[in-house]
Amino acid sequence: MEENKITPIITDKTPETPVEGALSLEQQLEAMKIENERLLIKYKRLEQSKLEEDMFISNVFHGMKNYFNQILGFLDIISDGNLEEEDQKTYLNIIEKASSSAHSLSEEFLLWKKSGSNKFEAQISEIELSSFVDSLINSSREMANLKKINFNDSIDSGISVMADPSMLKSVLENLISNAIKFTEPEGNISISCERKDNEVKIYVIDDGRGIPKDRQDKILNSLGDTTIGTSGEKGTGFGLHTCNGLIKKMGGHIDFTSEEGKGATFSVTLPAGSR
Picture 1 (cartoon, rainbow, N blue to C red):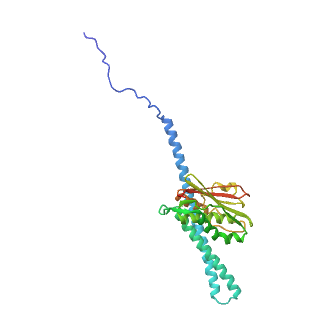
Picture 2: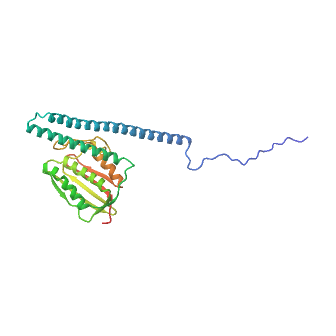
Picture 3: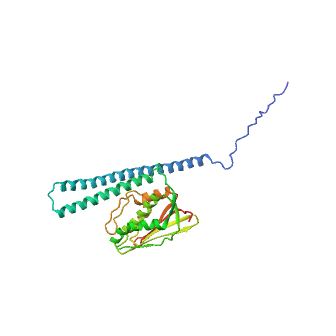
């Protein structure tokens, strides 16, 4: 009688071994948890940003409504024809200021929308800085003279940048306007630049009140972040947020350093031109 034999089962499969460098299940779950937390934080930030933007737009239109109410109200009074000549001049002056403020606010609003829209691209050309900045200083001089502020322009002729002229004009006008706004009467503002390799830095420096430390982290990215100037000047809250967006569109970046009570230095970095 033949003995029962046990025949071994032969297979080409071998026990699975972990692939070198592969994450364990626990590690994969932990990585997924971290990624989910990151996405949740990002979503909450976007949601908060949208809420802030909606509230800001609402405040802008409320401001516009107030300006137009002033204009229409005083026009009504003037149209009655019962005013003394001196009173009429006073009311016309108020109407002129309200109209100017409404116009500035609408222009800044459109520029802000432009800075954040992909539909608007920068029209880059070569800009010679010396004459470009001179014209901006001249247009700001009347405002500076009211506070007896001294301008020091030390931009050498021949240095150029690659930028969109209208965008760069808006950015530098805003930085100069802010410097005037936050500089005490008889203070000083200097504008200079330096070229290093393929970049040019434009500096706007003032010896004004400076930026409080608790506002520095958000100042370039927050809407509606506005402060009264040293002579009671008001802002719209578009300024630096819009500047930041416009500079990025031109392939540059904006930075600042400041110490409260000791002024601020803003720098705009842009690609250098051929000169």
